[in-house]
Length: 516
Image (cartoon, rainbow, N blue to C red; front, side):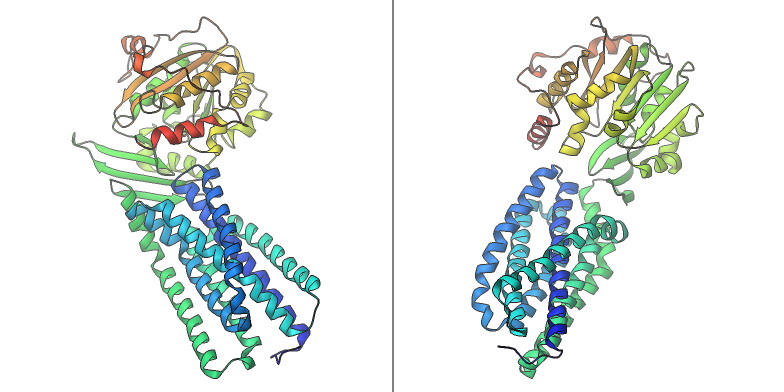
């Protein structure tokens, strides 16, 4: 049986399939936005993706069942469901950011939002199937094929639009709000216009008014989104935020305050993790760089360290002929060159003619590298998710080993042997598994606590050297000798090697730092 429509049947069917396409694209954007937000805020992208995908798929099944009684009034039911989906999906990122920043209820809120969005998406399919069959008689198999073809192609477009268009141009919060508005128009306006002759005037007015209300809420929130994001971000940091930028790779935040000593305390955070404090960063960087440079140092490779502070220490040595720095995020390099206080802190290291900067993923770059380096400094963020854990894997250290010149050495920043002993000793064991001799050592960095490093090289008699520049503020021969001693309660041997296929460091990091 056919239904009286505002368009010929063929055109009406195409319009409904276009609505299916758009709604599918919007649904996948909501899904990806929740996964990406969890990865940014909490880390451990595998866990976040697993929570979102499993909850949403389960909820879609629940939504499909709950939609069965609504098939008697599919037009009004579909319009109401799309309005709710546009509102919840559009506001989802903002609501979850608020739950993270002020309520410390991110995971419970994520489950609720993912379930709600999934249930609403699941309710779409039975209702859309009913609408398609109301347009003209069609066997169930053909109708299902048409509907899912439009649905899957829409999912492809949404999946590509999120990382390549929405996120770079609009950001997380505004991108979700825009998608919510598109969802409302495509899901409500198209269906209401096509099937308006089936609805009583009062119902039509009510549904159009509801759609206008959804768009008004999303539009008003869009206008207030920048202020909300500033306030929410500030709630996550103890000190006033001086700069905040979202790049394709990470969130960069710089805070500034005056310390009790009267000195300015500039702090850099990447994805919420502290990278340095200007008050005591010299302790970290002197300890990282000078032990490895006590040997041969004509050509130096720095992996990570985009702030230029390790590079500053490298350039103290006149016999360093070339320093190559490999950093994934070009925006971090730009800030290190041009942001006054960071550039002053690294002593304008990037202006030194001996420095060569490569913007690339260190793992991929090493696979194609053929040059040899006398010293390699690995200064990477902590391995709290799979993406960074690969930079602490046996495979990664094997690649580094290939570019170390005969007699050369490597050093790896390795986290805290006090707060995260399993992580620290797993890194040390992983370096050994790559075929290098190791000397673990640790120092006190007040902003971080007890912080450790692993010196490595092919020489089985490898040891910490005391040939350090005389003008260092922290490190000397006595500190270096003491740094190789670990108290009994800091030693661990119940750890596994970290590999690409078995990223044990992610488990260790998340377990050890959650209560630190």
